[in-house]
Length: 162
Image (tube, rainbow, N blue to C red; front, side):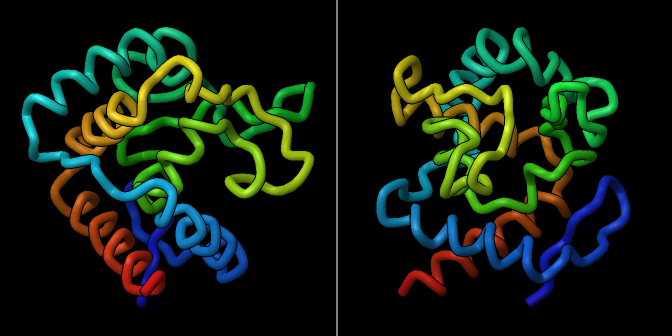
């Protein structure tokens, strides 16, 4: 299995990062089943509206480009909001992990203990269906090859769960 991490060129990610992401993904598949369909037009349109209202306006920007210098920590130790387009790292996470981060925030098991982040928990604002729609919208904007790789990540995470 090869997992990729980069903006335009696909380089393997470090094993430790992959294992922690995979563990969190597996842990959450039983709680948060994959329901984001980047080919379901009604779900995508709904996800776009929700994304524009909550995600783009506050942090990730209209074109999913994220905040400037998103890989460089701010003085408070937090990282700026990353892009959700193919130049970011969202696509190398399984849907279950993305769902958990959106619903519960960037806290364990979705982040290391004591991780500092401005990513809020949207579970009190957005329904599970809303969150799946947002994920479907984000995925619909990725190039075909990126969607294919992310689908393989989802399939492998599901396989490991069984």
